[in-house]
Length: 202
Image 1 (tube, rainbow, N blue to C red):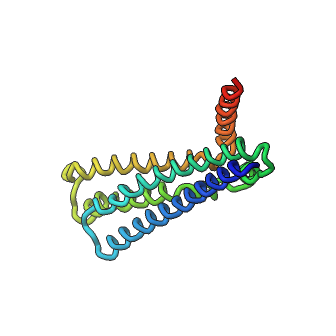
Image 2 (spheres, rainbow, N blue to C red; image 1 turned 60 degrees about the vertical axis):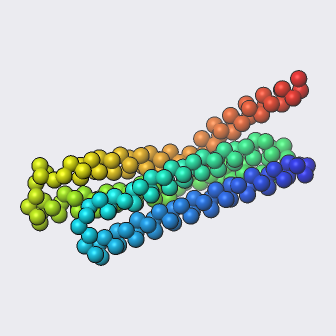
Image 3 (tube, rainbow, N blue to C red; image 1 turned 180 degrees about the vertical axis):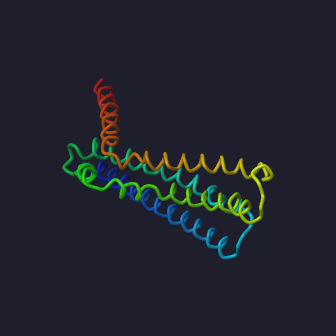
């Protein structure tokens, strides 16, 4: 590996590490926010149901950004394995992907789900508290009926449920956790790089 290739390798590895740090920051920030809002609402007996839905507005962009960061990590990892490791004597990403494949066969599915689903779980908890505040408490203790509740309660509930479903999909489809997806991206890089090499020879 010459100096230019080594520099490129180091820069891309640093980008991967920065993406990982950003993921952790987003996760910590969003979960702290959810915990803060729920603690405030419960300790102060907040009567406005919509407050419980506020964290969803933060969880949604954070989860989407985390999803994109993980896709970027997968793309960079595949590039390093194909372009800079396959013939250069450095095999960190190549070996790491093999280890992920080995580990994925031996890990409990529940553990994998819990590792990847913090946004979906947090959003589901918010929706549960929203339902309790908007519907259960009003009907059970204030003798309200479904017909007399504001339409905004139902609209918010529908939107909140869709957000939970979307975040659950992102959690399920976190692609860099799947060895098969990494192999697909490596194949794409192989095709693209082979084309570039062919054009250079011409």
